[in-house]
Length: 217
Image 1: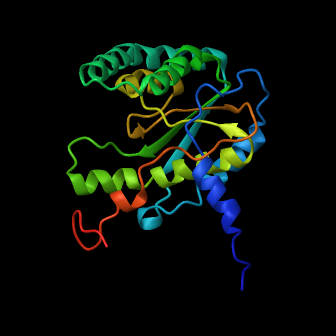
Image 2 (image 1 turned 45 degrees about the horizontal axis):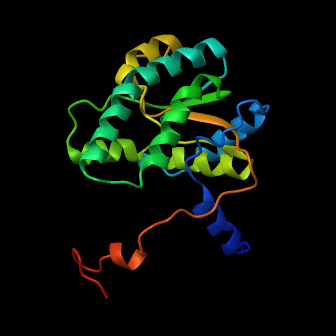
């Protein structure tokens, strides 16, 4: 019989793996063997039919990172502007820190030492809801495993998708075939500071329903 998990340590990992943008250390060295090790852990995630059709493109070349950042910012500028206008119109006043953090990442993305582009074979065009969610469900558990493994080794990252409007240009840059779909871009670097704390969330009792919509216990 295997030993039980240390629940306190496991819960600390799960509740403190945050999206890291401002606290990425742009100058700290990255151990690429550790990155490879983390990808190996990511690939222990479950996947439908055990097809394991993920691929991970790790980008360290400065010129290629700069080009990915340029594609990212081509979409980010209009996206951030629309978000700020929408939030202002709705009278929301507590989102500035999050938006500023995202804008900071866009500004320094080319300097983040490692970009990881998770890919999956196939294309999602024209699929119904069941097929589409099943299709993405084959890779996103592995992407989250990667986030957790990176955190345990002192690396921070965040799941971003803003380069995907220009996916074909990123594919040409990285030699990714037309039959393969990029699902995200994860900028990876050591994080500054000691650790992270759990985020603010609504009480779980408010968002958990039992045996039906909005049925509480």
